[in-house]
Length: 187
Image (tube, rainbow, N blue to C red; front, side, top):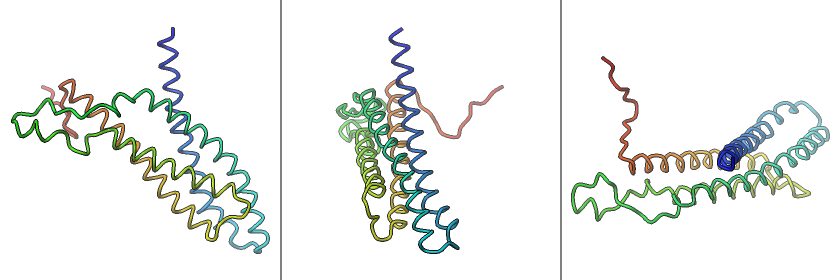
């Protein structure tokens, strides 16, 4: 029973991580692209009122998402820590002494991808929390939100790359070779 609980807990944690990321990216996109266009014809005072209310609601989403992202990230990191902190190993496909000395490519080190993902993700969350928490928004808040949107998209890429490298290394350790975009022939 405990093994089932652990698997369900890990699955829910991964789901929360993805869902909270979606809320941050979608909310940022909506707040910075849809709201300004929707209130363009309103008077300045009305625009500021709408932005203020939207910011107040978005703040709550950002805080809940930030907390859940950190917690689910810790759960995921705990689960994969052995892969991230493992010393470098040579490829089982190494055929010469030079191949053995060379070690794995920098791109095949999941720990490096994990560090990039977590540090960039932390930066994006700090920016989102800052933009929605301070009493007076910074000058050019839309520019800051657009910058944060780009950072969030980079974080998603880095998370995908981390997982991909882990899976490729796991397959290689088991001797499984996958050739992308090639389907087995059937007779």
